[in-house]
Length: 156
Image (cartoon, rainbow, N blue to C red; front, side, top):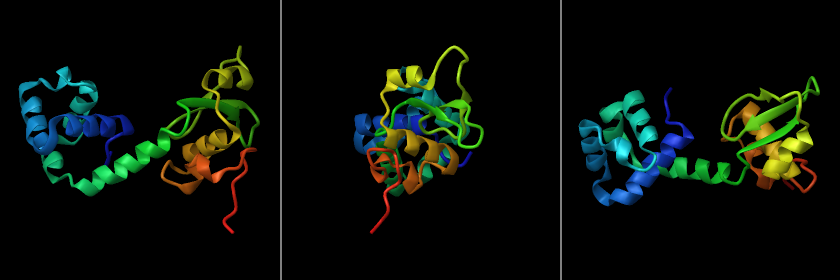
């Protein structure tokens, strides 16, 4: 893994916001003392330490935060989950925001029942489908690029 997950980025962004200019030193100290678990999203901060370590933290630059904030803003426009039909098989599937691939729909539930919980628009469902297959940084994963019927808008 070369980059933190979205939840890890959220934890880092929140920690930076809470601790200001010297946030890297504060986080390093928390990691050394094991007190990062007492912070909001502490489990995600611990995962960053375990997966990337203090050297990675020291080398982290503001540009990486700007990119992470953009990705998070895009993902926050999407529902946490939605259901749709698999493009090749027609089977009902579940998509989760920010994750690749899909899950099978439980046999006792319909796509409509599932989506009644999350209220996704057709454009958001289409964006979720594109993101789960093509990647969440692709323009097709942005619901703003779809019309009300869930069709990809053409650039004129």
